[in-house]
Length: 246
Image (cartoon, rainbow, N blue to C red; front, side, top):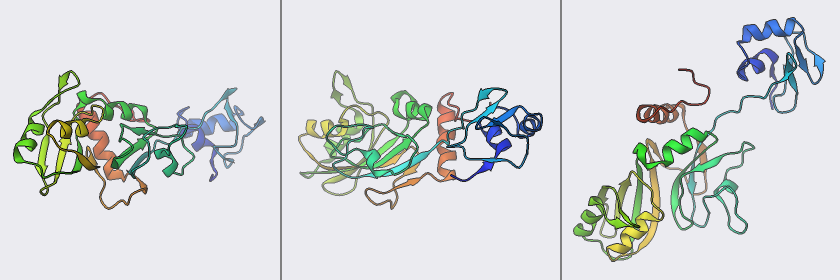
């Protein structure tokens, strides 16, 4: 872990401004690993060093991560599983993150992972109307009538699915955009119209697209992607990203 200036560490942890942190340091109010640190050039390792300000232990601010993963078939969308491979096995980073929403074991495609709990809630809950787009291949040719039935909404699990956007790609392939996520919803819808899903791939969540990300690979969201995603959330709720001030 790269060393950072002590005053920056204190400010980044949300204790005070950097200038005020410098005052604490020169005033003999800061300890590093039990020893007073009064030199402004002091550098610390945020993962190893123990920093105290006025006797209070300062916890480093956790960096908020937003990751896109192209989930392969055979992986379970879970943080812990006794027997199956899990999606976190594919993302080799020390920070604890968790998946947003689910893709079942046999499905592939875009999965977002983060350590931002509020983002997880706002993207997962259907009341916020965030779109998720899927590309589906079915076993038998699918009729225009069947596509219209899925688009209008269908009885399922004691309620009715919400209207969806459905576009034909070929005789056996179509794309569907949902604003909800009932358990195995698309597979159940396809069964109700007398067909069967052969492959299901999520290609978009809100403004985030899978693009050319290969199966099993992951990447951090770009600054532009994060900005648009968080702006969309803010417009639909009282969401406030970690570290922001309103």
